Image (cartoon, rainbow, N blue to C red; front, side):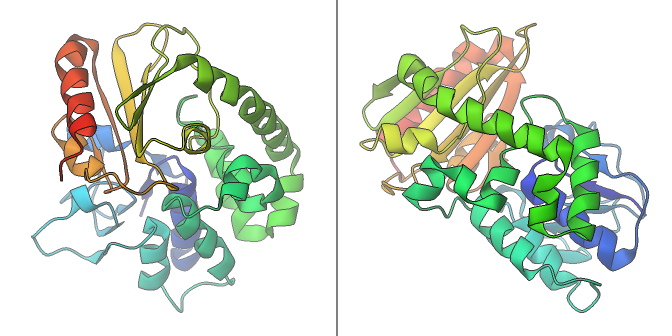
Length: 295
């Protein structure tokens, strides 16, 4: 059996739960949804796929993304839970060797962006929120770090996890990046109707930072769209869209929207990656639909 999941906080928690419930010790396979969308995901019989699209070759599938819903029978659990980890937790209930209820509670809140304004502005005050920000897909999959977090969260409480030297360094880096990110947002964001368009394509090294901060800086907006190149080669465009968590008047299901442009996700948050040759066709259409804000 292999665990196959996504290299984000929800995916890490999924891996913690599955590895504990089934006593799986071998390395985790970290994949992105695009690997499935493009047919390049190496899924094998016996694999347990979580927080990713369904693949008929897997043994168990556990997910919650609305754009990944299927109509054919499968072994596992799909529901519109606030996190994929919640579905893993429910599916394997009674098989865990530790109490993961607190960890799954925070996975729910983090993946569904259920934050207060204080948690957005001062994540350093909230242990799990800060830890989740140390996992950034913008620096590659970081498989070694994700595997380490799985081991730590299986064995230690959050205080001891944050005290790990590698984790502590990343937490300090996140705090620095978040302080600087507000300035980047103010410089590279334009407002069109009620849409905050954060365009980092002019930057060779797009800044990382708190993705919810724009909702505090631009409270009049109902949705943000963040655009960047995947790396310095500028061959792949990455688009992330999120409903404002403080001004909930976006009528667009952004997961369904980006499903038309090689991506997907939830009603309130979604992402896509596509070849730069499609940029001039895709971006105006994506932004146009957000500006129109028609359900």
